[in-house]
Amino acid sequence: MKPSYSIFIFNLLLLQYLSPLGLAQDFDFFYFVQQWPGAYCNSKQQRCCYPKTGRPSADFGIHGLWPNYRDGSYPSNCNSNSAFDRTQISEALSSMQKDWPSLSCPSSDGLRFWSHEWEKHGTCSESELDQKEYFEAAIKLKEKANLLKLLYDAGIEANDEFYSLESIREAIQKGVGYTPGIQCNKDSGGHSQLYQVYLCVDTSGSEFIKCPVLPRGNCSSSIQFPKF
Image (cartoon, rainbow, N blue to C red; front, side):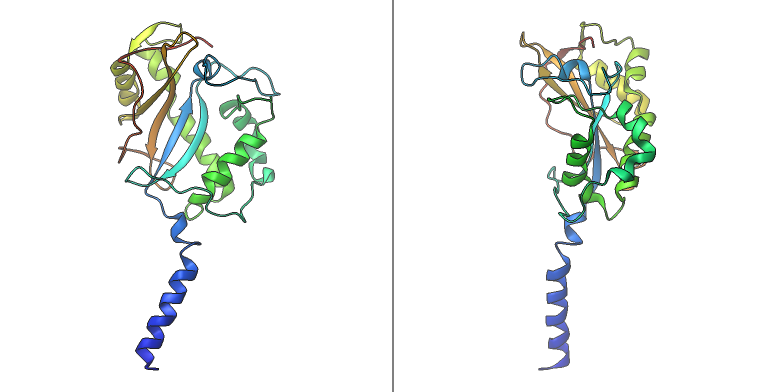
């Protein structure tokens, strides 16, 4: 066997071996997603249970920090050997209970929610962030994008009133610098209501960027900002 051919075969086998370990963790940007608890708990699609720590504050809560590709697809469950380790969030626990509460039923301490987010999404960003850094990055992004204040400053309040989708988008864009993605759900009366806000973040998990692609919108032109 010629040396050049041997090297080619070796490199090919090496690439096949490394691809599930390395390429599966490549991604282009993060979606940083925050959800409004008033819409989650006022939806006909799902039940709402407060965390064991009590009723969350009337503020947007983190849903997740999700690696994404520019074509709109995303990796998931990239490393089955990287299980959620609660000791990695010990220093950020109080912030996570406040800023990243679980509203799913049955009532929980949040560990199941955070474990799901790490194992499905966080493991796909290990090329950039380890587990501790991943959760801390999300908390810092929440501090940088105070959505409730940005909307309040634009005269948009969680008072069950209806606001134009464009005014909500513009208020957030003015404060963050980039156009957000807005997702709505429906209350029991079928009204479109503000549910989730998507912001795009660079692969370091630290800086907001212009979204390469925005999630498909499902909101009416006028949406409700429900009380919580």
